Image (cartoon, rainbow, N blue to C red; front, side, top):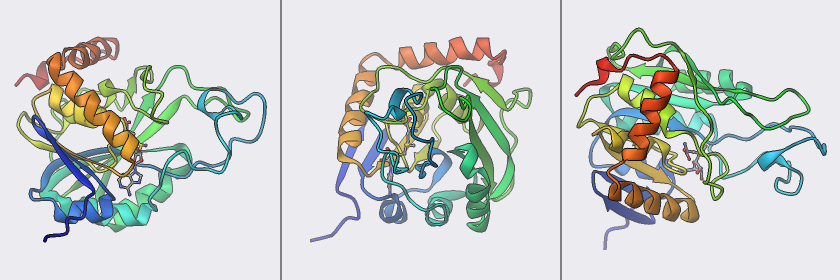
Length: 261
Ligand SMILES: C[S@@+](CC[C@H](N)C(=O)[O-])C[C@H]1O[C@@H](n2cnc3c(N)ncnc32)[C@H](O)[C@@H]1O
C-alpha cells in the first residue's frame, strides 16, 4: 500500500485539490506549476480588547489569541513553494502590514527574488482601536529569469471589496483581486498553484480564465466547502467570477486587452 502525504484528493474539471499540509503535499505533486498566487496564513498581532472592535474581531467571535486558522511559520513555506514551481515562475504572496518584512526576508532566503509590493484597497475594513486597516499587501516575487507582466500599464494598487456570503471562512479574498494577479503572470492553459487555498479565490480565478489549478488546504471544513464552491462555479461556467473581474477591471482603469487569449 502506498502512503500519500494528503488526506484527500479531489479532481474537479481542470483543478486538483488536496486536503493536507502544504509542507507534505507540495514535494509529492506530479507536475511543477507555472505560477503561485496565495494568501498565506499568519498569526495576527493583537488588535486590543475593546468593545469598538467589529466584524470577525468582535469580542464575541474572536479570542484575541492571534489565530483565526492554522498557521505555518514563514520560514517553512518558501522552500516547498520554490521547489513546486518550474524554473521560471512568478509568486504572489499576500501578507499583512505587520508581516511584510518577515515574510519578504523568509521568501528571499528560500530563493525568490523580489519585484515589488502590490496593495489591495478593501474599501470597508472593520473598526479597530489602532486605525481601520484598509490595505493588504502582496509580495510580487519571481524564480529564475524574470518575466514581464502581461500589462506593464497596471498600477500596484487594486481596489475592490472583500467578498460577502462566505462566513464559513475567516479570511476569504476577492476573486477579482486574484484574477488580476493570475492574468498578469500567466497564459491560458498554465498551471496555477495555491498552497493555502482557503475559500478558493485563486483556484476560481485561475479556472475562470482558462488556467489549470492545484489547491492545498489543511482544514477539512474549508476543503469541503471550497470543493462545493468550485463545483457550483463550474455549473454556471464561471460567469459571475469573470463579470466581477470585468467590473473591477473597469473601476481600476485597467484596459484588459493585454489579457485576450
Ligand atoms: C489566509 S487563508 C487563505 C484564504 C484564501 N485566499 C481565500 O480566498 O479564501 C490561509 C489558509 O491556509 C490554510 N492552512 C493553514 N496551514 C496550512 C497548511 N500547513 N497547509 C495547507 N493549508 C494550510 C488555512 O486553513 C486557511 O484556510
